[in-house]
Image 1 (cartoon, rainbow, N blue to C red):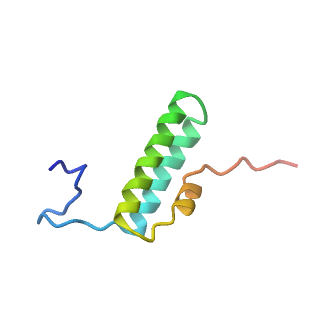
Image 2 (image 1 turned 90 degrees about the vertical axis):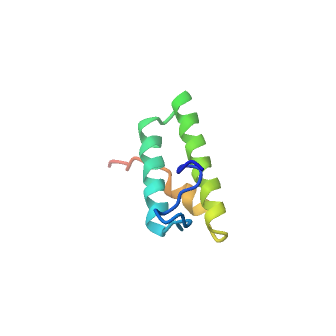
Length: 81
């Protein structure tokens, strides 16, 4: 099987994802949302986000999709006085 479709260690065992992996994925999506806030590119970013959600749901039955999607959003611009 392809390494992307079935991430595994060198010994052939399934590798469990950690909180750090989830955080890195959220940062990737967050950075893409900031770079492509609208248009066709943003639709692709949303697809990437959906792919991560599906991957993480399969990895962890306690995966919190709402929390992950919130972490994927870029911070809103701070209002200046």
